[in-house]
Image (tube, rainbow, N blue to C red; front, side, top):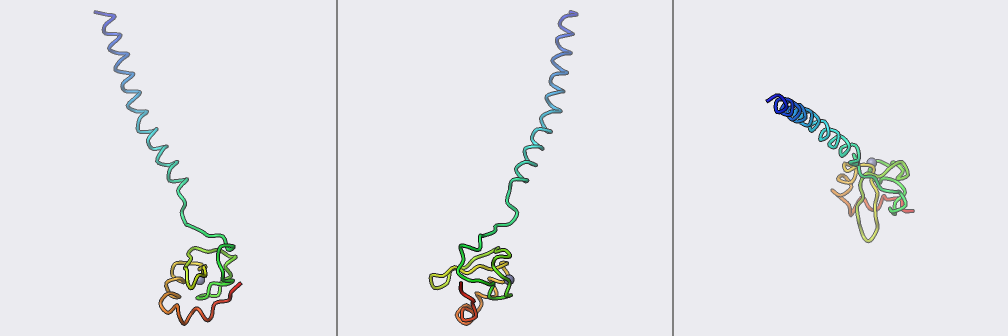
Length: 100
Ligand SMILES: [Zn+2]
């Protein structure tokens, strides 16, 4: 009976160890995935045809968060808010765009 008891003890402690290890591994994986996820999509200023955000006047070289296609041109905006404001009256606002 004694060898069987020892074997049972080893099996039980192995189960306990594998149980306590499992959640740790999955937590690390979740953290890694979150760290590699892009927080904000940005565009290179070379892909747009305007020099400045036509809504707020910020240079596109300072960073583009959103783009818009208009009359075969690509417009870059510093934020989705600027793009939305421009889009409300794009036909009129397009006249104030500083093209490259
Ligand atoms: Zn802007």
